[in-house]
Length: 160
Image (cartoon, rainbow, N blue to C red; front, side, top):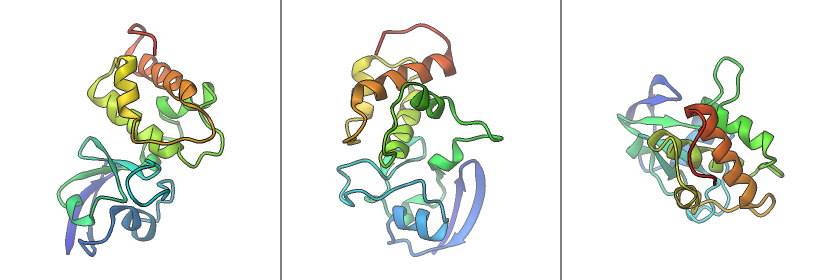
């Protein structure tokens, strides 16, 4: 099928199998490898991307759902050689160890902050509920979410 979509802020038109997993399309056809496959069943969140502003597990999403939509991957967050505030916060708060789950966590938090620039601790917990990390721990991830919210939208808000 012919797909027309926006990828990381840029319009694209491509031919693709609409029944292919979005994860495979991203990695194999778009050659963007920041999105990882963990469980392949939508339980770990390593493959999280933003589709039409929502965090989705790309292993459970079919390419046909992309048509006419807007897709953001972790590669699209960096602008002009500058990391996104969320990526910087993950580094600053030591919310990265092995790095396998990080792109999915970052994309989940990015989707949250776009909809809610000043989330409560419970809203952050819900946003990353579908993401599993075995190395870093969630305290650092929640601290990174708070840091990114403050950096993007000013000081204030409830401590995460």
